[in-house]
Length: 101
Image: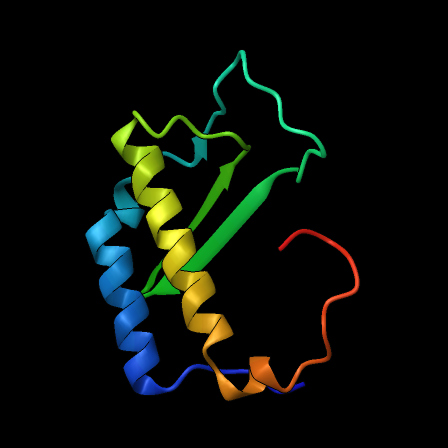
C-alpha cells in the first residue's frame, strides 16, 4: 500500500520533532530497571532524516516518564502514531490481526 505524508503532515511532524528536541536526545533511552512488561514489545527504533541530519533513537519499555527526555519521546511517538492513523492510506488497510497496537 503506497504511503506518504502531505506537506502539512510533514510540517506537523517536524514541529513535533522540534518540540521534543529529537536531534538533541541521546541515541539510547533505557527502561526503568526494576519494571517489567509482559508481553515485552521489544526494542523500539525511530529513524529520522531531515535537513541533512540523520538520527536513530533506540529505546526499551517502560520508559521513566519522570525523565523529561523519555516523556518527550513518548509524546513524539504518540503524535507520530496519531498522524499515521489519521491518513486515508492507513484507514484503507485491513484490520490488524496481531502484533502490538
